[in-house]
Structure formats: C-alpha cells, structure tokens
Image 1 (cartoon, rainbow, N blue to C red):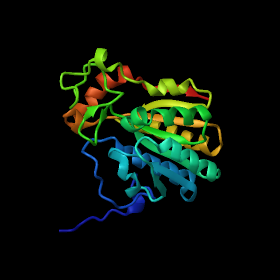
Image 2: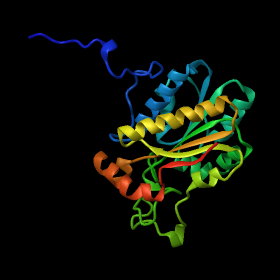
Image 3: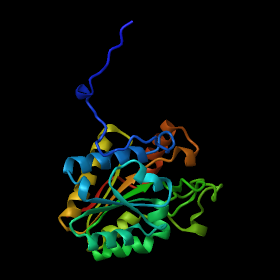
Image 4: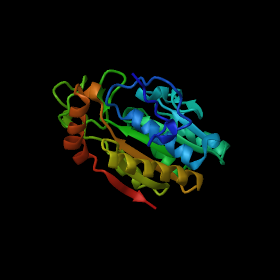
Length: 252
C-alpha cells in the first residue's frame, strides 16, 4: 500500500507563520480560534510581526499569547484599553491591539474602553461578543439578549430587573476619536473574508494614527449556550444578528 504525501507548497491554505504549534483550549465550534487565525494572517500580510504588541484579556481568550508569536502584555480584567494606551504612547511606532470579550470590554472594562476611544488612542480593539460570560460559568453579560437563559438568569434575562443589552459598539461609534466601528462574524466563508478585511483595516488605521478602531465579532458560545456548534450558529443568526446587525457603523 502506497501513501501519498502532500507537498505543503501545494496546499491552498498554509498555517500563518507566527501561529505557534499549540493545542487550542477553546470549545468545539468556538469563534475565538478563527479570529486568532485571521489576526495572524493580517500581521503576516502586513509584515508587522516585529512591531506588533497584543494586549491579552481576562476571560476565554486569556491564553491568546499561547497561539500568536508576537509581543504580548496581559491586562487586569477590563483594563486592556488602558494598557494599550500606555504601550502605544510609549512606543508610537508600534501596532497595538487589544483582544477582548464582551464581559471584559463591556462590563468591568466599560470606562477604560469608552475613554480610550474618546481620546482617539491609535489602537485597534478586537471585540468578541457572544452574549455571555463564557469562561467563568456562563453568567449573564451586558450583551445578553432579553429572555436569553444563562446560569444567572435561568428563566431568561428580565429587562425590568437587569436592563437591556448594551450595544457598546453603537455607543463607541458616536465618539469623535473613533475612526472605525464595524460589526462582523465568522460563521461562513464569506463572513470570514469580510471580518479579515476589517481587522486588516483596523490595524492599518492604528499604524496611520487615524484614531481608535473597533471590530466587533458577533460569536457563538456553544458550551455556554448549551448547544451543538451547528445549533449555536443557527441560534446566532436567528437571535444575535437582529439585535447586533452586521456591517459598518462608522468608517472614516
């Protein structure tokens, strides 16, 4: 029996050079791994590996530094935009980005996010919105939808008691310091291509000192939502997208 060995040079897709050979810790169907790959591809294509600084969050993506071979700093919960501000101001020639979930960015980190964006800090913010605290037990987040069940809202989110979902990208888009506020997803091949283009634009904006760029990725959390990966994708399209419609809110 003969074994056909595929020449890596003939593959349609090759692993980005700066991605480490580390086993992913994310759950099956999680959007984080796809977004990590897109960031790696963009950094490779822009040839900015040596000048890029990533700010790691607290939450599911806390180990982002395990996967991308660039300079990283880890921030306290919610403080990534503040740390990114310092990194960029001290090293203005660097490309600085944060990578944050909705609990990190839109809850404990709301103040840091809004004020960094209002100042127009020349950073890029990659924002993963799956409507839940994925890592710490599936609790309700600021982005949780009305009547959406979580571990702390087992009967569904009651807006009378807890308010409405926080559409923080829409708020940030109103700030003069923000040059890009776009909402994307990675659930289809076409959406992955669009998300990559917007991540690339956000990084280019940072290097051009145009102000703050925010790329929100509406994502799934199959474990937290207690669904299969395919079921989570369907639920996201049917429920998350109407609440968080995809597209550019601001692009100047």
